[in-house]
Image 1 (cartoon, helix red, strand yellow):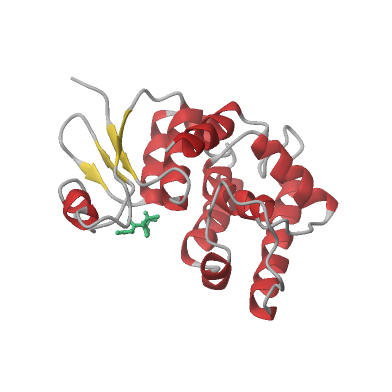
Image 2 (spheres, rainbow, N blue to C red):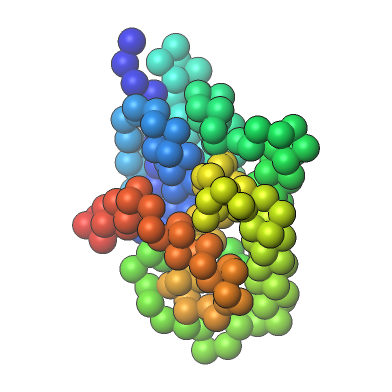
Length: 207
Ligand SMILES: N[C@@H](CCC(=O)N[C@@H](CS)C(=O)NCC(=O)O)C(=O)O
């Protein structure tokens, strides 16, 4: 049987694609990429051929099963490599809470600071509701680092699905030059120190 195939959007812009791609890479799962350019006349048709939701990412497993949501793919990756979730059940539940909060929230940040890996420019002004979301994000990161981060530089020490879910937000803070408190700033640096993050960005600049 062949490898799982991950359908993804443009690496420069597709924040939802980066999450499971990073989780699969960190889990050491061998997979093939199926890139689909977004915002083209045939984009929807091409996505619908591989994803019933009409959205990427979607992972096609060797048995033909399709998993079509970023968080569900991260969870699948965690089933292949248990290290992608914390060991303790209560901590695992917190990891899932912060992952789900990211997945379901922060609409204003996503709208005003959409992922653009080649951008390096602050917004003229950060709207108040976006600033409030940034406060919440920094609180989540600082809380996780203080309570669970002893054994490494990530939210739960070693890399977990929570870091995969938050990685595209970290890139926005870099691209939009958002000033951060020391703990969140160090966390962003830790994500950027991952060779897989640099590889994704390098691919983005070649697209
Ligand atoms: N909830 C979905 C969201 C996926 C999503 O919105 N993907 C965007 C790209 S980042 C998409 O496919 N948009 C369709 C299009 O641009 O035509 C997930 O977590 O995977």
